[in-house]
Amino acid sequence: VARILGISAHYHEAAAALVIDGKVVAALAEERLSRVKNDARLPFRAAHKCLELGQLRAQDLDEVVFYEDPFERLERVLVTSLRDYPRGAAGLPGIFRSQWGSRIWVLDLLAEGLGVSRRVVTHRRHHHCHAASAFFLSSFERAAVLTVDGVGEGMTTGLFLGEGNALTFEECLTFPHSLGLLYAAFTAYLGFEVNEGEHQVMGLSAFGKPRYLEKFARVVRSFPDGSFELVPEFFNFQGDASALYSSRLEGVFGPSRAYKREFGPFGEDGFEDPDSQRFADIAASLQATLERVLLGLCRRLRTKTESSHLCLAGGVALNALANARIFREAGFQDIFVQPAAGDAGGAMGAAILGSLEHGDPRPAPLDSAALGVPLDEHRAVELAEALGLLVEPCEDIAGAAVKQLQSGNIIAWAQGRSEWGPRALGQRSILCRADLPSLRTRLTDAIKKRETFRPFAPVTLESEAPRYFEYRKNSMTPFMTTVCQVRDPELALVTHVDGSARLQTVKEGNPLEPVLSQMSSKGNKPVLLNTSLNGSGEPLATTEGDVLGLFSRTNIDALFLERYLIRRPTR
Amino acid sequence: MKLARRIRTLWSLFAHFARPSRFFLLPLLVILLLTGALLAATSGLSYVAPFWYAIF
Image (tube, rainbow over all chains, first blue to last red):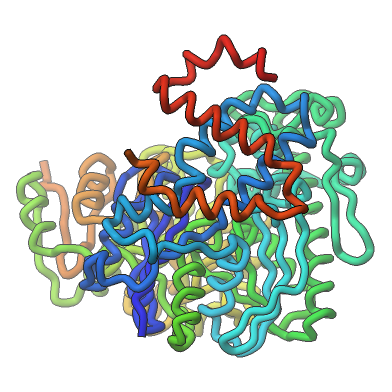
């Protein structure tokens, strides 16, 4: 019987997760409370909120587990600095400052910030935490586990076998040979923000053709056993995040795209301006290379473990296109990718590893991502009235939502506890009908303010999915971590240029299930566009204040917050 | 002094590097710690800047 808090921080999105007696009680990214996108600082807000949700004081915790060994990471940094000297000397002051400033002392800082004894603050290894977050939340009794991210300590790729309550390390690849860093370097090269723009690169890849595969073969060497190497001369992983590649990479692929430069218009044969098309082709080639290498790793893991099930974790496991290809081609019956597969998920894995080591049972399979902050209805009503909004209690909230959707309106949907992971999964969503393509401009320009090439995702009932999508039952679609081809041409609003969609399937228990069921019973397609309830560059709305703030400053037609319909007064 | 409360970490740090296979990293670790001490004493990197290229 143990109360364990898991913590991830410092590199991408920081997060906290609380496991009590083997049950996942709460999990939350720091950005959701600090309102700083991808906030990597130590997640004290999230940690205290998790404790509040678990009705615990920090002093009640049996263990606080950090998701990385800080000394092993320091060792890797020192070894790399020596190996690259004098090439990376310019970056040394920054490295020394960051290591001395907080990273070496992270366990002390956690103890001080949480007000717990330093004795209870421990760490587990980064990729073990990723693997634990994937396998122990899956419904599989035995599974191969592949972790792929930028780098944790020295490991970049981990192969594990999960059986019951045990996770066995099989083998790994180490820095600098990293698919996460490869993708990050090309994210920077293509003019997007590293650690944020990777999904934009994935979206862009559908607009291109993989014309640069031979050039990629010069940069990434892959071997028949499934392993791979990056050719170090093309990269600069010791530099800052905006320049992870060397000038030799530009020598091969041409000049990089200026940061956030606009893409030209898209015509029937691709982008009208050749440079935009070149970047789309490079993104397509990168995606194809990533998929090929991942397939090699998965096949090796399948042979090694003789498992019919696979769990994926690490930032690269958020690449829904690659996950779909692995599902199609790697020979596994089912694949599970938890919703926060990136670094935030490490907090969950750390807490679970701590819990299992205290002798607690393995957590139940994850069936909902609603592990975050609940909404306070009374405060929401007060706030809405103070903002001059019309507040109307609804007995049948799903029925009222369906009426709005049938009229072609765009609605905000806030129900229950906020989602764990980067996707809106029915708790904090913007919804509209997926068969009304005319809504795209309003969504893209007025509400989300994002690039036109980025696709929107659909949500449907699990039972109806095969009718509208090329869907084979799996453990990824409940968390929107894979894609399917769209069958129905009327669903243009949620169909990407390559015919795919990042589908979410729901069943009883998800707040969207009654809405979709009523859509179906009233003769509409039970398929909605489901995009995250946030503005451009913002974290997903979390509290009632965030939700009402967003609703007030956008032209979303109606807000459904718990049992209330909230609208603007008619002028 | 925070450093006094961080003895456990300092001990773990030295325990990590005090293995024969990691001895070659000790000089760099010592430089890291000295640099850190210098930074802590002077409260800023700008004071250290004139010495930087002399060190490397």
